[in-house]
Length: 507
Image (cartoon, rainbow, N blue to C red; front, top):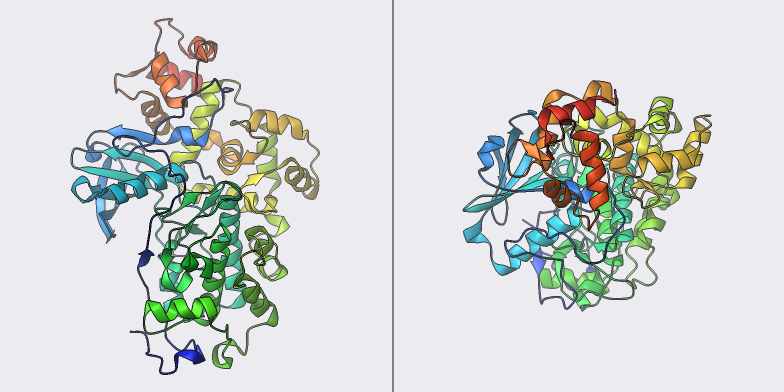
């Protein structure tokens, strides 16, 4: 229970941290995410686009029985609607988390939240943002399959430890702000950042963290504002309470998270939401000596910047990520010696000469390779990704190779590895290009990848299924070329043996 506060004007943070539910108020007036009749994402339509292999193509939408694809192992928890299960994919034995939502419990609002979350997560590609793999629609439920994180919530770790050391807090803040930078550059505002929505990939003390729960997230066009009061009481920015805000509200929430990590208590507390809101809007930010006497002035100054009430004067996510306190105290996470020559050599040597090969390797790397297999590659990536946005620019690649004392043609790397043609090496593209495929390309994984294309389960991949998978427009010659490369018996479809032969011909 929160301690009651006798003198509200003193604004003391003397109450313990407790988990609070998200808050929702009046609706936004901004544009909503795309939806379809059954609450599943649509492919975009319109003028012809260049043929690209985009990670968002890899989201599988399946109608059928969940248990045909997964073995349900244990129930992990119960959310505001539906249950979360730990499950194992039959063919590959890879472990996943599945959020199962009964259709009977889906209101118009929760359906909209679910679709919005899926639509946003399918486009975000970052090592500290939860991955979504597929949606399986059963007759009475919708099942969202995501990455399995077994390390628990940040909230529980704070409660167990009472507070984090500055270095530990900085390592966490480095990862959080990197993910937020990625979101903001994509025009996405999370709106409910809090320790309960940050989970650890595994139980190790140095585990990577993942931001989850994008149900209230929104895309925001430049120079526009959101209106809805949403979020969780302790972490809501003052401008959200006042009803007009942009992505800077996430920076405030992260400032509260940092305060909580270092002290174990929220900066603005009270006996009820009304009191807390009042203090968020007008109360004084304090650092009581009991909790803060051993904390550096640099940490306190950073929190003050993040909790600047005027959002126009509040630093951006990029500025917080680049703050010396965050960067200097998280050096163990991003030390130069993590940039391994092996990863960089694999990146420069990657060559998937055939489009279906490159797409399939991308799908396997994104969907079927475990986090344990890519842990060292993840560390190498974040060491090269100096601005933290989840993608490698030409300049970052040049610096990474220079530090490793490897000479390379960056144009060649971008040409061969930049599958979606955005001018960067995205996280999934980096993993795809740097994996040891001789070790990772198993028959079971190829069979599972084949199923991703063979949506009707006929045992063959047709031209229509290829077009449906890639969501591209009028690229008849491209699909004819894919068929020509893979359909060795000339029957107009690609069977499993032809598919395996194409994929294994690379090695």
